[in-house]
Length: 203
Image (tube, rainbow, N blue to C red; front, side, top):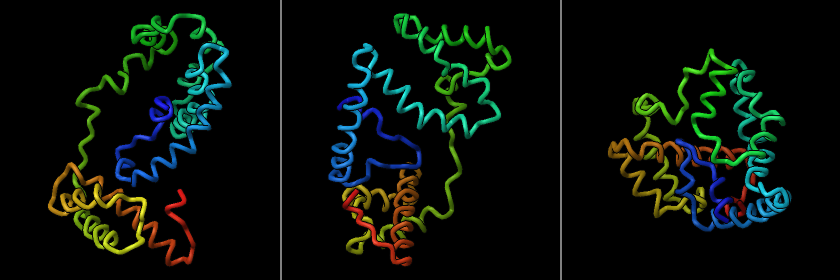
């Protein structure tokens, strides 16, 4: 259960914490069986979590990063080679600290060894985009739509409405809520106009 929840998607522009708790619970129920099956597959190796991460999460998540950054992928792909994985599994995980990976880069990829890891960039990595001029418009449209019965029922009104009001008043910390809610509202409206039946509560 803990491993399953750790895999929940986290994204700056996706506020899944605003979804109705019942929807989240149903999603957890569906995915829990899948993760149990995956972990059982590699349990005998003694590295069940590592196996699930490499053969499930890596395939869908990290590989997508390679495709998005194909111009630098060549320098990253060798770290997914079977020989490297085998070497890692033959040693205590305590051996693989930041110093280890930094030494690997200095040895095999000296041209990019000076580039700090994303988590070590500090303030330089704290993106602070300018507020959108459309935030209040998004918040107002989302509030009006959520006032109607049946519009995006998976979005928790109790959690969303106060934050949308805050965005309407100009609060920067909840701007992403207006953006996230408005996207769901637009999706709901476009499906209705197209005559596409969609059961939000069936998710």
